[in-house]
Amino acid sequence: MTFTMLVAGLVLLICGGELLVRGASKLAASLGLSPLVVGLTVVAFGTSSPEFAVSLQAALSGQAEIALGNVVGSNTFNVLFILGLTALITPLVVSAQVVRQEVPIMIGASLALAIFALDRSITRWEAALLFAALLGYTAFLVVQSRRESREVQVEYAAGPRRAARRHWEDRLPVQLLTIAGGLVLLVTGSNWLVAAAVAIAQSLGVSELVIGLTIVAAGTSLPEVAASVTAAIRGKRDIAVGNVIGSNIFNVLGVVGLAGIVSPAPLPVPQSLLQFDLLVMLAVAFACLPVFLTGAAIARWEGAVFFAYYVAYAAFLVLTARQHEALATFALAMQTVVLPLTVLTLVVVSVRALRGRHRG
Image 1 (cartoon, rainbow, N blue to C red):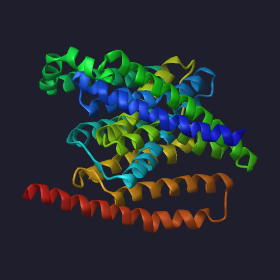
Image 2 (cartoon, rainbow, N blue to C red):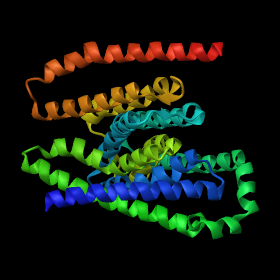
Image 3 (cartoon, rainbow, N blue to C red):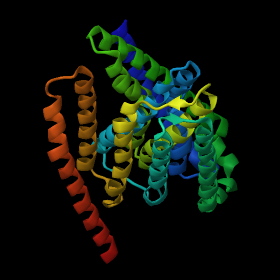
Image 4 (cartoon, rainbow, N blue to C red):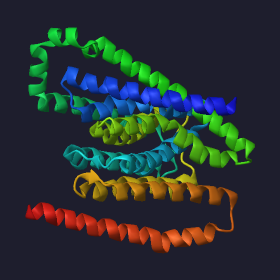
């Protein structure tokens, strides 16, 4: 039964990702919005619904530490695993808007969360500020996109009835139903997959701490995996990248914001989260800038680096939780060899890319 649920969850994720990307692409053309903006809003917010549900329920039930841990773990997973895996499948072209605007906003939101967490809690007014920032950001995106896409809107408005007769998918209700159906399949599939994975992990004797740090955070991000991979395969690369960056922004501003507002007490910030996992999330957010600047694309080798770092991060969590004897050697190798080499490589590649642009 557990294996059946695991397979069924994967099937629902694949089908849900296909429906969501198809509906979002059509909606972009219908409303005169760019695919990037749809990826940053409709797709990103929709695929973040598992994180939202888990964190909100945790805050209401007094398990507030799960609310923050889920968001931090999911944001790290989104960039390292999802962008890494998607870039390995096909190199991702990064929109100039993402480099100039969305990545700095993601970094700013992450920094704000880190600053609010310094006193070991997220108060209601701090959470309200985060949520208000999300509302302002979403409104700004829609206005910006409609201003820049005026020609597309005029072209679409010139013959909506003819287009509606030729293509049933061009009807707005059909597009909304397609998106809603995709989201339902994604959420249901992720829930089934997480439940099956937790059952398998428990049967193998893995601790609940490790399950929470890895399977739950990764499991609630499975809709983002399905949506981004499907978008990349279908050539909708703006949606693939926008989905990840938009989900990270939504997780910090929306999920933490609303969870902190409804929580009966300030959200507590565990010391371990403040000293390690939150710093990893910040480092990953900052790492997007030099990677995205290298030719405004995520190459396969950069995707491989991201993916390998997530594997290393997950291995470190497992070794730490089990207090394995290899932990000290593993940590020393990462700190003295792997991390410095990666930073040096990113700096050199970024400098070369910036020089090339300046000469051009």
